[in-house]
Amino acid sequence: MCGSFFAVAILTVVWVVRNSLSLQTVQRLHSISQQKEKIMFGKLITCFTLVCFTVTLFGCSSQEEISSEALPVREKRISEVITTSGEVYSFISDKNGYYAMLMDTIIVGTLQNGKKVTIPMSQVTRVSVMRLNAVTSTLVVVGGILVVVAIAVAAKQSCPFVYSYNGDRYVFDGEPYGGAICEGLKRPDWCRLEYLKPVSNEYRLLLTNEVDETQYTDEFKLWIVDHRPGLDVMVDADGKLYTVDHPFAPHRALDSKGNNILRWVSAKDPLFWESDMRVKDPKQPADYRDTLYLSFPRPKDNEKAKLVVSGSTTLWGSQMLKRMTELRGEAIQPWFTELKSPAVRQLLDFWNKREELYHLQVKLRVGSAWVTRGDIMGGGPFVTEERVVPLDLSGVEGDTLNIMLAPPAGFWQLDRFAVDYSADEPLDSLEVAATKAVGHDGADLLGTLNSADGNYYVSPVTGQTATLVFPAPPEKADRERAILAKVSGYYDMRMDETGKPQSEKLTRIAFEPGYPVQFALEEFIKWRTELLEANRVEREKKQ
Image 1 (spheres, rainbow, N blue to C red):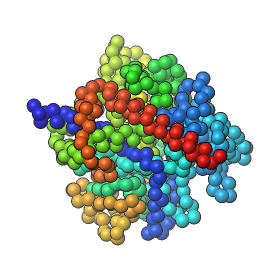
Image 2: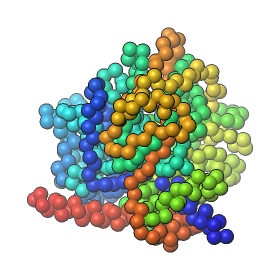
Image 3: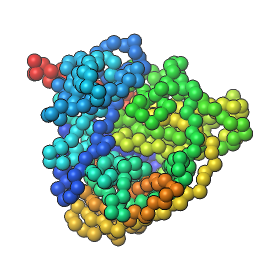
Image 4: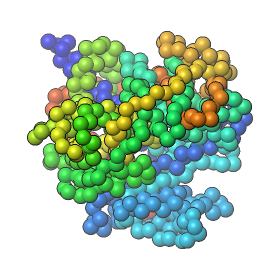
């Protein structure tokens, strides 16, 4: 009985440690001196959610200028702003490399067309901040989070970064095996490489450690997929390939309050739907979840569909992974050992389906009931991969496919939904191993990364980089090409493993439905209160 309880209690934090990030106050700059080509972030401009911390996503009636209090004083590298109405403003830099600037309660900058604009912070929901030292070509962990005190940036703790060479520079293109925080959770992952281009009949990539963790990469291969022009190629959570031909966007999208969210979930773009944690009350169970309703056209007699989803874990949701894991204190390592048990993994699956923090259930309207027919796996938040969720439509009636999602407050950012009913078409797919793989210490990694055999490339220090080269087969004139990285491994986060386990909280997380979200909201309120006070003091110093 005691052992059974321990097994159940173990599940409390396993899915609560998926894709972990921490909000450390300052991120190191990481120099990669061994690379010959210049390195740059093609997706360095990373959006971080202000809605979770400071402003209301859809609450346009709220004019509270709280967000300005949480922004760094005189932030000068705001490269993009998204407003609560869905407008996107992209700024150009000046000769000093500065973009738009936060000035008290407004953002001031020059747009790409040369027009100068002023945007009140009360209208801002998301921002992007440039973090790049272009002079020394040093890498910086992607993005700066504006809601951290002074010039602080977010320190990600979840997985390695993959960079693709596009013929001119290396571009941030993937973050595989997020959430695999110990060997018991090791898993393969697939990253669509959007920027990879052949150079001299080869593909060049970097695998970097840019966070405070030890990374263990077991396998790194490329999937080269040639297909008919006009098709899109995607994978599901298990790595199965699908073709997407004629996806339908939703023709209706509402939240539980009846707000039209169609603009926020119809296309892969900078607009994301997210919860507004600022207005959530941890004492009110009704605030623990949002509910989204999506409606799609359904051709007659279709019994199968492919739901295309672009979404990921929020920054705060990722932060909660680490916070909840550290509740175990000195029992973290024994807990990691238990995670190798298949029985414990089954318990984890049960818990995750109940809470949906990092696996979001997809429910279809079948008759008068909502029936679970799939789930969306969390990831990110830096790279939002598009995935296919195969759906069984048996029992669904009529010419409309209705889908319901109930994301826990503050844990999900959702970008695009579409449904494709086309049959999968033949693909010319090839798995290729690297022809050159050199570790940070100059070691030959070919035998290490060419198979998933438990022989790991170990990267224990921030700033370490492996260089990989793959053959690029000739492309056919009548075919288009998609390339995915298949990467398997796990990582060891740097956590506080001192002190006794906080048994009361862990037990409630394990057995009390909804408590993980309640705990996350309580932690958010404490964090935000401390943040605003620290930034108030900082502003007074500047005056």
